[in-house]
Image (cartoon, rainbow, N blue to C red):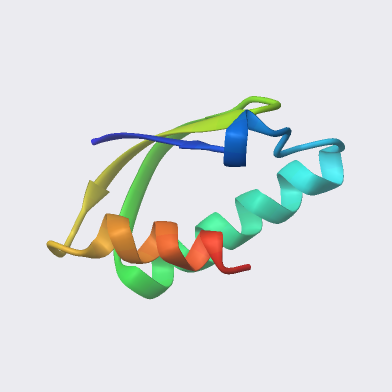
Length: 70
């Protein structure tokens, strides 16, 4: 699946390399926790592209909820 996540009203998501590193860490944690295979990603200033394979019917939604609540 190709998943896109954008900032609210297309606001900036990442302002530093530390922001990107934190998001990558949270994505890894969420993918492990909810059994999502992440094959690739692109982190842009205002959005993220993910190439993923869900291992359960709700893996994608649960990871995206997890990321949105951090």
